[in-house]
Amino acid sequence: MEKLEFVLPSEIEKRSFEIITKELEEMGKIIPKDEEPVTKRVIHTSADFDYADTMCYSKNAVDIAKRLIKSGAHVVTDTNMAMAGINKKRLAAFGGEVHCFMADEAVALEAKNRQVTRASVSMERAAKLEGPVIFAIGNAPTALVSLYEMMEKGIFKPDFVIGVPVGFVNVVAAKELFITSDVPYIINRGRKGGSNIAAAIVNALVYSL
Image 1 (tube, rainbow, N blue to C red):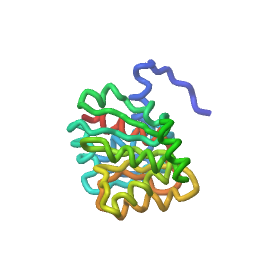
Image 2 (cartoon, one colour):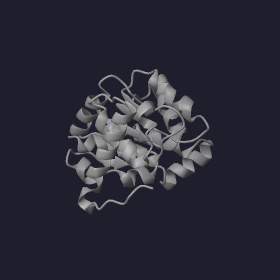
Image 3 (cartoon, one colour):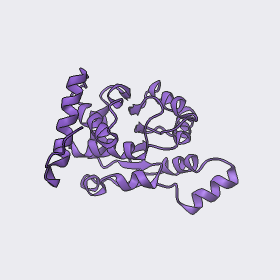
Image 4 (cartoon, one colour):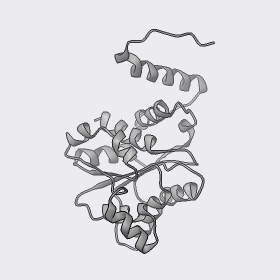
């Protein structure tokens, strides 16, 4: 049985990351230095070491995302839960803002009238934002599909995609669309992910600046 250890509240996160680092070393898992803060924070959020194997990054993804954040990029999420989990104060220090259009009544009405998902309409709204946009998708694979379709039609191209929707229907295929695209991305392959993972990735990027 694991013994309780006394840890000051202010030291809990630090201790957690020490444990993560130690266990990754014991497993023989080596994460590239630039990706390490992001992958470790995802593991910290989920307590799931599978992410050490399934997290995928396009070339220079972390540096590109950080440059976008420093330039005041918007962050668009597909759930209010992800939006709530992102450190908006730290993001605002660089001029950025978090948006989620999913709960807007106008979005819901348009989606109903067009018989499409609210996620699709939300992505169309996000495409009209001025300035660079980072998409942090943790729930709806249709959000990724919508972004990809707009890109294929030449309507809009995302500056960066964080693709970590969770689930069973179209989740894996939607993620793979961007792995084969030329859009910079951080994506977790497979079924795992979630709004908390999307928020953790954004926070890891912001905290490393």
